Amino acid sequence: MFIELLRQAGHQEYAELQKELTDGFRMTGPLTPGTGWLPRLGGRYAIPISMAELYTASIIDTCRRARPYKPSSTQMLSSRLETGG
Image (cartoon, rainbow, N blue to C red; front, top):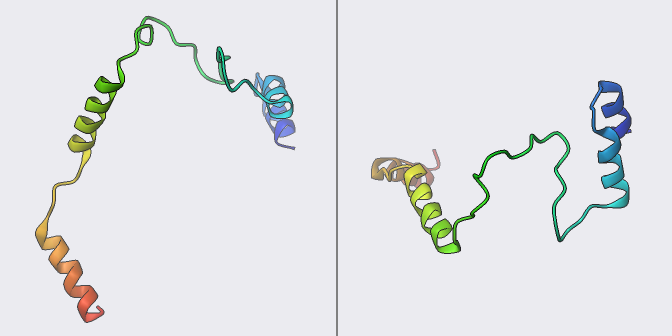
């Protein structure tokens, strides 16, 4: 039914998606382009970074996105939990 809805909606790659859902898709080896995804152009992914660089970048990004600790908010929540209100 899902594939039929895609077909009726005019999804251009519904047949490929149906084939992948019915017959399965590769789990190893070269990946086929996903349906509906634009191709990767340029050399952005030609030379991947090392795991150490990825780890460092992830920590930096996580720290950048983290909310600053606000003791007053924690104290307010704690008092509400203690008083039940």
